[in-house]
Image 1 (tube, rainbow, N blue to C red):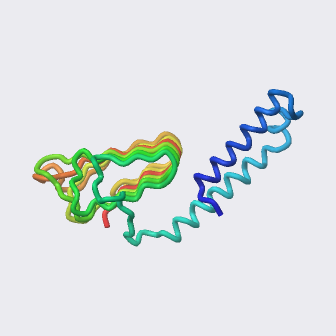
Image 2 (cartoon, rainbow, N blue to C red):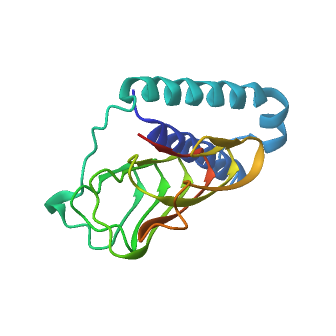
Image 3 (cartoon, rainbow, N blue to C red):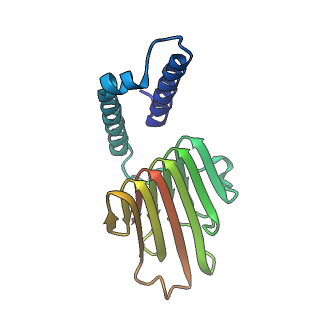
Length: 196
């Protein structure tokens, strides 16, 4: 079965083609007809997407397996329009690093990352997809997370509902000489930042 990004892309493409053909009168179909008679299809599609999403989460778990970009040189940022980003920043600098996806999840491991003195900034953004950032126990961080439709969990604190914003920091963040400032936001998806 295709992944959820491909599934949504195909679904949107099919609906768009049907509506376009209807607008040009190649087929006799209207949005009103669709909404009146086929609205349960929307619920079925959402249900299937949720099942696929949670099944994939159970399969991958949090076993620490990440795929670094080819060549091991991140060049400061990684972005994708379609597909997941999985990055292990072991032996790489965090400061100024960023990831961005349109249709895909962002998973970042900070274990073994190099920190410069002072504040090291990390920015992660998405539109459709979850953001997961794994912070090692010995790293001091301040984290801000936001999502329009989803949950935000940062270092043990959680906000649920619509249009969530949350910030939290580790106990020794203010006094640490090397620390990380994380900014993570997505529109449709969850944001989870936790210590491993």
